[in-house]
Length: 190
Image 1: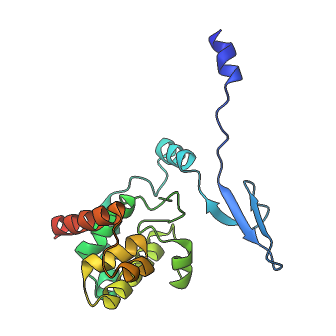
Image 2: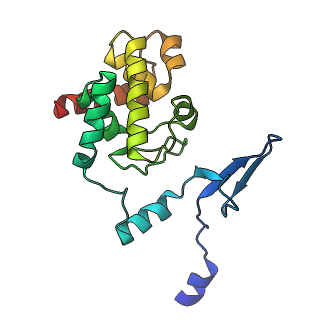
């Protein structure tokens, strides 16, 4: 009886989804890319986590100290407090360089594809590229809000237009909790 139940209940299929936009503007999706024009659009997190755990592949559950040289270098280059950068990474991805959110944000600093493209980030899942782009974006937000970390973090979480619209931290519980959490982490990293 258990064998019959096991055979009749099937788990949903899981796979990475790839996207390619052709010259005519038609968007193609596939789980089996045919050539290098297809880029990862949606990563199968459960499969990725299982593989990385089973085979100890790099990029999953890595030691935060491993990223310290990149963080320090980018912090110096852009003039952003390294404790703040570490706090953002901690809150955004938990130091998982392969993290992909349900909304499509990627990597350690959870860059949205459009933001990453504007920052000229070549590979969001490459820790060095991701941290450099994320710190550069954080510096832009800090400059925009004249050094006000709370407003910069609110914009990092909910978007620059939302902070502008509300003239401060938007009244979204997620954003308000995010700002408080990151500032708390920052204090701990100091």
